[in-house]
Structure formats: structure tokens, C-alpha cells
Amino acid sequence: MIFSVAWRNLWRSKTRSLVVMISICAGLAAGIFYVAFYNGMVDQRIDTAIKTEASHIQVHYPDYLNNPDKKYLIEDAGSVTKKILALDGVKSVTQRVILNSMIQSPTTGAGVKITGINPDEERNVTNLYSKLIEGSYFEDGKRNPIVIGKKLAEKLKVKLRSKVVVTLQDMQGNITGAAFRVEGIFETSNTSFDESCVFVKKDDLARVMLLNDNSCHEIAVLLNDNKLLDPVADLMTKELPDLDVKTWRKIMPEVDLVESSLDFTTYIIIIIILFALLFGIINTMLMAVLERAKELGMLMAIGMNRIRVFTMILLETVLLSLTGGICGIVLGWILNLYFAKAGISLSAWSDAYRSMGFDTLIFTRLSISTSLEIAVMIVITGIIASIYPAIKALRLRPAEAIRIDM
Image (cartoon, rainbow, N blue to C red; front, side):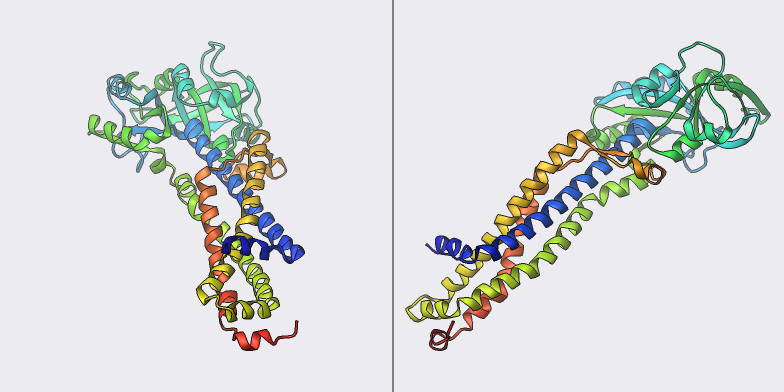
């Protein structure tokens, strides 16, 4: 009975109730859409970190990451690769030879990280081949091909089939170099990666470095699912006690920080919105109580106890908040579902976003659990907002309230 009375009371002033509900709906829809947008940005950054830059897990010589010296090699890399492939959850594995060196064009030079790869294996671990905007991905069979980023190509002022010279130090400590011809130019969502990383064939780089073909600096591992990250990493650590096994979270802590702060950021955004709406709800319910002071006094005079009065006002406030909140959640979901397929283009700010490693086309994502948590927060907001108006109602003296001239 109290529930039905509270619902009818809510619509006594339709305009006022609708204004508050629309405010709650619009505020929450905007907040939910921002959460979905931010989720999409984080998902895209993690996807790029795994599929383009780092893979799920990397294996190195124990001191390599702290001091990436060419002497810190994984010996008998073929045997190590077989052990990793035998583990459950592992999808693909590739070996890499990595060297920090100089690359020069006829115009200028730059410091880069040269990565020697096995193209067929690398294709199964990373999606770099799909990022090419010009040329091919080690497909023409020519000697010493090199694939570079668009940003680096602009810096060196080179194009397809241009010749560049790589200067490096071989395994005996001698300064040497080799000429490579640009076969492909790629562009990712990370301009820093595009400017600092180049790729050549592992055999070509090993030949220049006088390196054993069965040695490498890094073994990259792609898993069937990111959820298997920690269990597989633990298994690999046990299988390879003499090597350093690290997940992408350890290799790229800045990306891990973005992901770990996702839930915190979501709660902060929604709490700020609900906090702002809280005062509007309190004001509305306080006006409703003061307008009905004579009625409330009469109800208490004929025997309605204070608990029922408090419950009625609490229900009115919760229903007001929940009605607007549910509409906001539904509207937020509609926007999320649309932009999850259509995407949001940020091409107008492409330079700024790519400098931080974010793509310029974001596909939103929203989870059901987040929506349920927001619904609970709305109910809590309604309960908090009802306290002051309810206290004002309980302080009314029936004899005085009845004599109020409305």
C-alpha cells in the first residue's frame, strides 16, 4: 500500500518530477557513455600492446631487459621454443634478434631498435603485417629487405625501394654495417613505435652480426586468451628456470596502469555525476514534503506512525531516482551498442592520440556488471537523498501542520 501511495505522490507534480528524472537520465546516460568510450580506448590500447608491440609473454636472458646487450642471448632457442609450444594455452611462438643501432639514409640518420624476425612465425604472433600502408611484408625474396614505420620514413625522407644503411656492432665487437632496401612501410596507432622500430629478416641480421642461427634475444609468445596470461606465465617460469619470463603487464607497465585504473576511473565518474544529481533530488523531495506538510500532519494525527512516513518518503525518493536512472542506463546502452559497431572517429586529434599509443577509431564497450553496479549506486543515492526530507517530515507536529494554510 505504501509503495502505491509513494508512486502516486511522485506524480502529483508531473513537471517537477519529469524535470528531475530527465536530469538523472541525461546525466547517467552521458556518464555511462563516457565509461563505455573509455573502456573501448583501454581495450584498443591493450590489443595494440599485445598484437602489435609486445605479444602476451616474452622470454629473455635474465639480465637482458635491465641491460639489453647483444651478448645476452637465449642459446638453443629451438629447444626452448618447442618446450613453450608444448604448454596448454600457447597459440604461437616466434624468435627475435634485437639490436639498438643507427639507420642512415642519404639525407639523415636516426637511432632505432632493429628487430630480426622470421616473417612466417611473426605473422602468427603479431599483426604488424596488416599495418602496412605501402609495399609488402618480406614477400619479394630480395636480399636484405627492411620494413620501417611511416614516421621514420618521413624523418629519413625515404620511400619504397630506397636504400638505407644500418650500422651496428657484431658479436666480436667490431663496428660493421649493411645496406638494406625499404620493402614496406607500416603505420600503427603508436607514433613512437613507428619512429623507433624497424624490422628485417632474422637470417639477414644474424649474418651481419656473426650470430649463431639457433640463438636469439627474445622469444615472443601469443596465447589463446589473455585470461590465461598468469597461469601460462607461471608454467613457463617452472619449465624455463634459467630464463626470464615476463608478461606484457611487466614489459609495458604504463599500459597495465591504464587497465588497472579502469574500474577506479569508472566509479569516480559515476560518483561525481550522482553527487551532482543528489542535490537536485534532495531539493525536489524537500519541496514535495513542505508542500504536503498539512497532509502529512493529518496522516500522523489519524495514527500513521513515523516509520511509515519515513518509508513513504524514502520510497518516493528511490522511485524518482530509479526511474530516471533506469532510463539513463537504457539510453547509455543504446548509445554504446550503436558506437560499438559504428565506432567514434578521433581523426581530428590523431597526432595527440597516436603519440600516446591510442587509435583514432574507438569502439565502445560496456559490461552488464557495470550497469548493475550503477543501478545499485542509484538506489543508494536515492536513500541518501531521502534522509533530510524525511527528517523534516518527521519533525512536523501534527497539530501545527494541520493548521497550515496552503
